[in-house]
Image (cartoon, rainbow over all chains, first blue to last red; front, top):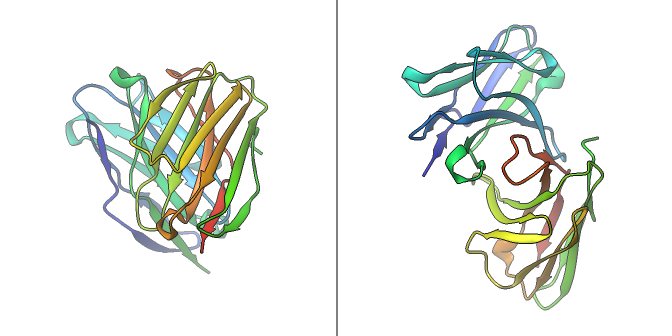
Length: 114
Length: 113
């Protein structure tokens, strides 16, 4: 069975600073990988996804993520955060062999200081 | 707006009440999902429907009863819930069960007293 770990429960970053959120997964084959964002009182919005090909994927809102097979990681980055980026971020892995059932990490809550 | 609408947004119910959560998707998708999001726990998949047929029940207690009358609508009927069932219940849809991307509604915040 697949699993996802997001080591950081909370991250505080200053507005304009860079942001990196860590995600490690466990899965026996090449997975589908996703990052979702959840603003307060809202559902999950897809930021970006990796299926195959270029290991650096671009998403919405200026986010990008890099798939590193050797490290089983799919870290999310943004060069300069905005106050509106304060939210909870979830990494998820889809198991191709299990009908793309999604398994989510525990989430990382991002606080943005002015 | 993701195209997945959930009502009500907030619900407070007693342990002896019966209530239902509703989800409607306007995306022409064929697969729909119920998730439970509790504080300090990862998102938990509860049920999956594909072309109106239930394809997965993730060991969910029988006090939660899903219903999918058509590919656009999904209900979660609730009865004799426990306080630990208080959570955010999220609905999602995708083109098909094996599709890549799930689109989520804003959720129903449920409080069981």
